[in-house]
Image (tube, rainbow, N blue to C red; front, side, top):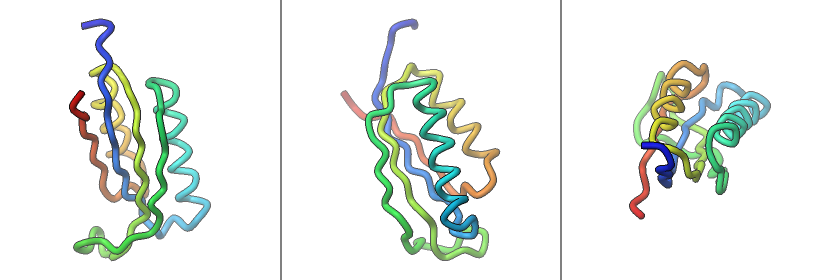
Length: 98
């Protein structure tokens, strides 16, 4: 299915234990990754928010929303990299309806 481009949103919850520089590094890492493989439309930093429930004994996380368009294969690869990246507490990738 070459040529199919879909719109996606991805929310990333980054551990506050990384500190400001670590959070910035993770945010930039995924910004660069998305720019390399997709068309990044926006990066919306929501900042530190209280988690609904503790994750890995943490009660706060740093939220970042990425909006991008990509071919259908890229989100699976992005999700795989989210899962193996230290400091990523939770991630969610959703396909936006056209």
